[in-house]
Structures are given as structure tokens and as C-alpha cells.
Length: 175
Ligand SMILES: NC(=O)C1=CN([C@@H]2O[C@H](COP(=O)(O)OP(=O)(O)OC[C@H]3O[C@@H](n4cnc5c(N)ncnc54)[C@H](O)[C@@H]3O)[C@@H](O)[C@H]2O)C=CC1
Ligand SMILES: Cc1cc2nc3c(=O)[nH]c(=O)nc-3n(C[C@H](O)[C@H](O)[C@H](O)COP(=O)(O)O)c2cc1C
Image 1 (cartoon, rainbow, N blue to C red):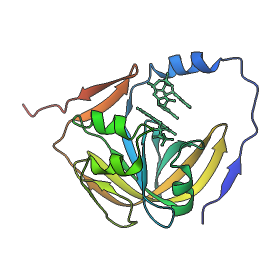
Image 2 (cartoon, rainbow, N blue to C red; image 1 turned 180 degrees about the horizontal axis):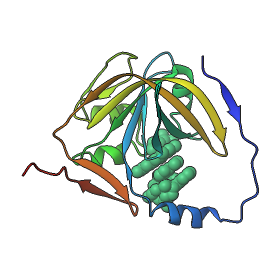
Image 3 (tube, protein in one colour; image 1 turned 120 degrees about the vertical axis):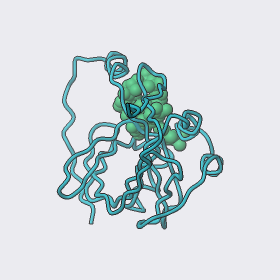
Image 4 (cartoon, rainbow, N blue to C red; image 1 turned 135 degrees about the horizontal axis):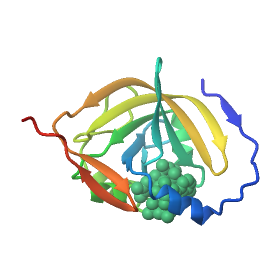
């Protein structure tokens, strides 16, 4: 059962744009977060994803409550974190907003594992999760997600979002 905590807003002296300009200096993995269930199938691109603890194996995902996908995630209480490979730049942009949901999913191959959330076939790694806790901060919900199944692709190169652009991240080849 998910629990919702609400943090008190605090006054900040840092302007929103200055914060975003600063955040653009942090490189991050790019992920497509998917869900399916009674709330319907939905997915969005997220860079705000992080490992929390390995016991129980938990990630966090930050989701803007104004996103069109928000009600589906809230109702389904399950999701999959699909971390993108170097070939997924256009897929990332499709799931990055404004495109109708069917068109987003039509652009790739999907399967399912344990929770029924869509697993991207050629993702670098997919964490199939149940949402265990939700904390509200400002415009976003932080979804704490316990992994119940994982699939990995150990051959593909990675994708990094840095300076508002995508960059391939090459694996060290064996020497
Ligand atoms: N955490 C989030 O909600 C993120 C949202 N986005 C959204 O994707 C679109 C494209 O983003 P960019 O080209 O990187 O330009 P941008 O100038 O809007 O964002 C620069 C950086 O600021 C951070 N950021 C942006 N919007 C944020 C938000 N609402 N809350 C917290 N952090 C945020 C992210 O680290 C982002 O890479 C924008 O609409 C942006 O709002 C992008 C990255 C993270
Ligand atoms: C590279 C990139 C990273 C993003 N990261 C996040 C994120 O971590 N959290 C979030 O709520 N939205 C993030 N977004 C924006 C969502 O993908 C977008 O709001 C979502 O697809 C919903 O759009 P919609 O309301 O038009 O459906 C990101 C967008 C891009 C392009």
C-alpha cells in the first residue's frame, strides 16, 4: 500500500531558470518510465531517476503532477524504469511530451515481465517495479519503487542527457 507524505514548501532565493540552467550541467541516464493496469497504459521520459537502497532494491522516480500520464501512474501503482541505449534518442523525444500515447508505444517493441508494465525490448536495463511510497515536493511526486524483476542487456552502449542534448556513452571494449 503506497503512503503519501507532503513536505512544507520553503522560500528559495534561487530563480527557477537559474536552477534549470545549473541542473543542465548534470549528466544523467535517460529512462522511459512505463505503466499499465486499470489506469491505462502510459509512459514518459525521465532523467530524475536514482538508486535509493538495495535492501529492499529501490529506485526513485520524480514525476510532475501536471503531466498527462500522472493519473495512470497513480492508479496503477506499478511501473517499469526502462533505461535507454544510444539508439533511443528519437524514442526519448517521443515520450518527452505532447505526443499521443498510442503513437509513443507504436514506435518500439514491448513485452511484459511481472507487474504488466511495458518492458522496452532493447533497453539497456529494465526495472519492473511496484510503487511502495510517494512523497510530494513542490510540483513533483517522488515515487519510491521496489524492483520485483530486472532484465539487462550487457552489450549495448548507453545514452546520457547533458547540456540539454543526448550523448552516446560507450562501453570500454575488452583489450
Ligand atoms: N525533473 C523533471 O521534471 C524534468 C523535466 N524536463 C522537461 O523536459 C523538457 C526539456 O528539458 P531540457 O531541454 O533539459 O530544458 P530545461 O531548461 O527545461 O531543463 C534543464 C534541466 O533542469 C531540470 N528541470 C527541468 N524542468 C524541471 C522541472 N520541472 N523540475 C525539476 N527539474 C527540472 C532538468 O535537470 C533539466 O535537464 C522541459 O519541458 C523540462 O521541464 C527535463 C528534465 C527533467
Ligand atoms: C530528457 C527529458 C527528461 C525528462 N525528465 C523528466 C523527469 O524526470 N520527470 C518528469 O516529470 N518529467 C520529465 N520530462 C518531461 C516528461 O517526459 C513529459 O512531461 C511527459 O512526457 C509528459 O508529457 P505530457 O504531459 O505531454 O504527456 C523529461 C523530458 C525529457 C525530454
